[in-house]
Length: 293
Ligand SMILES: [Mn+2]
Image 1 (tube, protein in one colour):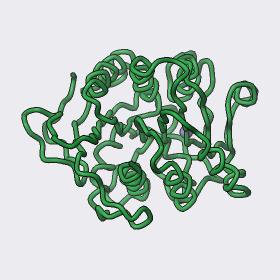
Image 2 (tube, helix red, strand yellow; image 1 turned 180 degrees about the vertical axis):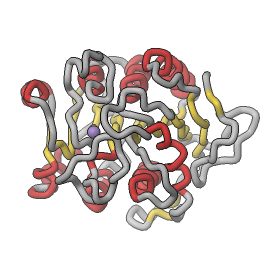
Image 3 (spheres, protein in one colour; image 1 turned 120 degrees about the horizontal axis):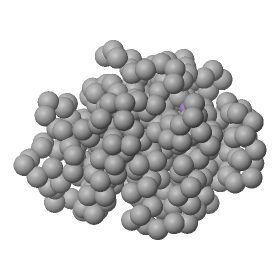
């Protein structure tokens, strides 16, 4: 455990902290974890502020979920932030993985707030170790494929994260909202995974909903906030036009209600101001995820 919990604003509707960060009598437990690391960001910096601004934005919402007609469950723990090593992915990743290992041992469903997207690999490394290879379906919301073998000479980066996750042998990887890729990524995507572009979301969302409905077994969601159009999420590392709107996201996310959702990360929120729509949309997606169980 490498948590640094002092003075961290807790996510809305989470339990008051006690000496034991894992303590709760609820059978369904969620652990919110911040990873304020943006060491592999390539364009606009600031994802290190994601955990703080998304938590702050979470206070703007009701505990009652209007669409699902459910209230946020009571077993939500805010475990605080990981003690990251700025500029050092390797050290940050090993701390994150070690914390995740503990969280999963406690049967807590992890909800990680990034941070840049590189951190998703560390989480899925831990989850794959706990569930086994060829078990998990990863649903990846993103404007980008993140499937490069290397980016700027680096194997581990927010631009290579899904390639590294493929190395972990998930059962399947489904990408939604893509509208930007290098040729090598597009070819790999055709060969090895299911990918729905943002255009397909606009033109035939029913087809994607059908695909999501058919998933059985454990599901992990990796959510890059830049899947939203920059109109709804301007404060992010690599904004990309022609993106999704919040209602499309809600429709796609809520279609996974009652599936076996084993965890989620929400990354690339680089808001620095209170009231920024990027952090607000991110907080709403996390609250939806909590009510989907
Ligand atoms: Mn992205």
